[in-house]
Image (cartoon, rainbow, N blue to C red; front, top):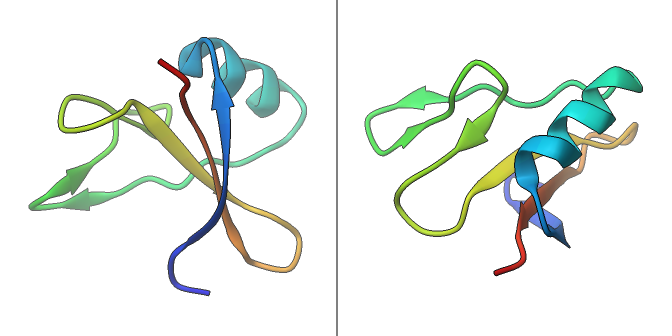
Length: 67
């Protein structure tokens, strides 16, 4: 899929990204005019804070701010 198939709401996106990255999860990095992530792969500012990653089958999943 070329879109997010599953979101995991979390209390702290930064902590979730750090934890998952320490376990080998690679986060997607985007540098598009309307979609820019930081060096950790976190999108901030316009809408919920969110970070995307792919499962072994290539599906796009995300952790996003639950608040």
